[in-house]
Amino acid sequence: MKDYENLLEQLRQGEITELTVTPEEFMDFQPVLMKYRYRKSIVGQAQKGGGVVYHFNGEQTTD
Image 1 (tube, rainbow, N blue to C red):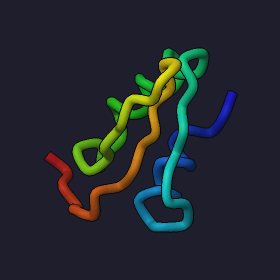
Image 2: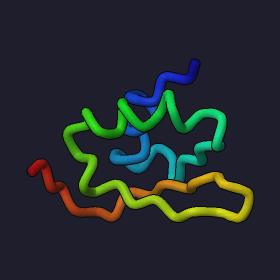
Image 3: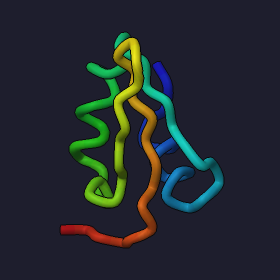
Image 4: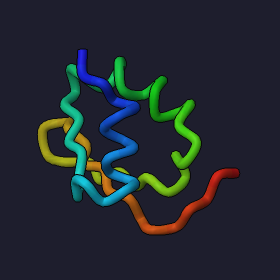
């Protein structure tokens, strides 16, 4: 399994520009995203075929 928490942090810090999650990975990824401190700043865009591409929107919201 991928280290989604680390990947989300890389996304937030600009080390990567996007994170693609396949339908097969989503059930492992979703709980990590829900616990992630900056989750409200992570925006996902659904792709054809069921994948989602996540980007960091630049705001440091922690609510």
